[in-house]
Length: 613
View (cartoon, one colour):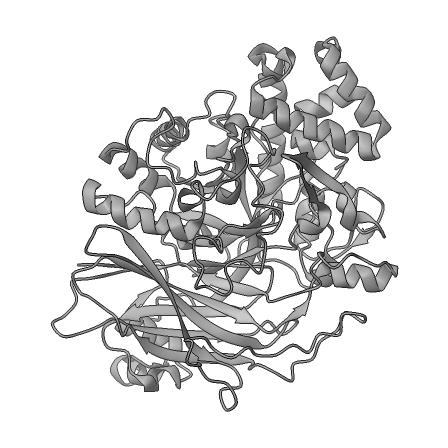
């Protein structure tokens, strides 16, 4: 129903009674401040207050003394400091005798006082000690740490409430549960719908209490029953899990059952698809026909798990590491369990540990203070293991989450996340709509009433299609508008996964609409001709002389089988633009070796739409 049609049926105003979101909100659901132990050890001295001010668009001074400001404010922020020892490392730094009586903590105190590389090394030791279960006793002693954590948590929730300004800027309360058994990343960011009054009724659950995700979900269930509040968990970095993020057994190695599937599908409706530590969509060995499977955020991150310990990453691990594979495993499990435990939408976020959600390529402040702007930050050694090295240049300047929320409030943004009407980007602010239905027509993509038609004739991203009408294949209405500060659009693709007759999931990527359509076409090899490249690496510039500023189309699945479960999501690719390393090379006058990428193609991923027979 268009606004004009609505006006004729309801009265003069074409917008009266409209009950769907019309404005997309951009934010970050994964920011760490000095309250996180590893962030503080790494030199971060910025508090939640400074993180909020920065996200709102104010100028702040970074931990290394550099003035920092966003090009545009964000609409919302989740500060998700680690629940494990929340605020405790600050006490170690301050020389609290309850902690520095331990020789390891005393040594960490000296390393933090020295700052720079020594402080960063201490932070790495902390992460490794947690992964291997060798943390010093005092930081795990409830009698010592709980009073510290309680005080820090209540101070944080108070600050969040103070900076939460409905309609202007939303400060969602959250924390990170940091399970990392043997270095395998099972981290989750927990996001509250509620304010301080409810959030303070339970101290955040930490992996020191249990590394088992099911125990986290049980705690979340208890919180909701006790307070009447709501929360959800967003896993991240499946790409660093060594196959454990979507494994087909539970934490104890038992086959997944229906109870597990119900709990996971209840609390984990989203996954973080991209952040500074790589791209978790898929891997080129899993998706060899996908030309964009390995071009962004794979190099360096597929060496092994988070800490480069235990064992190297192998091809056998990858089907249960990456998000596309997780969606495919979900189709298979739903067939046997009756519930899909891996039914999730996508967000992008930063995971920065310097409080600064600054991930534009020409304004990248790194993940940690040691990676903040400087001539040689690109070759800083982040981690070594298995004869390989992760450098700072492997890190991505990524990403953001976009939410189609009814208004800029905690409740509306959380509700958009819960219904999966959100999408992830690599840091660009592309505007993306994606609807599925049975009756979209080509003319629907040509109207300025995309949303009216999409909600009237179909379901939005994150939704479900069921029981195909006889003789019908699903139609998808997809439209994207470029970020005015980033590159034109190269193409929109639709990624499909489906359950084959053998019970195994398969995948395919379709190019559905593209820029410069008058000179580009799909070749005999089934691939769309490249858009070209205008980047001048030496000057870190590009032009929008290629690609299109907007793209839209109605696409019908040509290979649809109504008896097969399936999912579909849209992926929008920008034209090539300079990467943060190119800006650093130009600004600091440094030369980097050929293996350091200087050009990339930013992108956005819609949450999927599922089809169930």
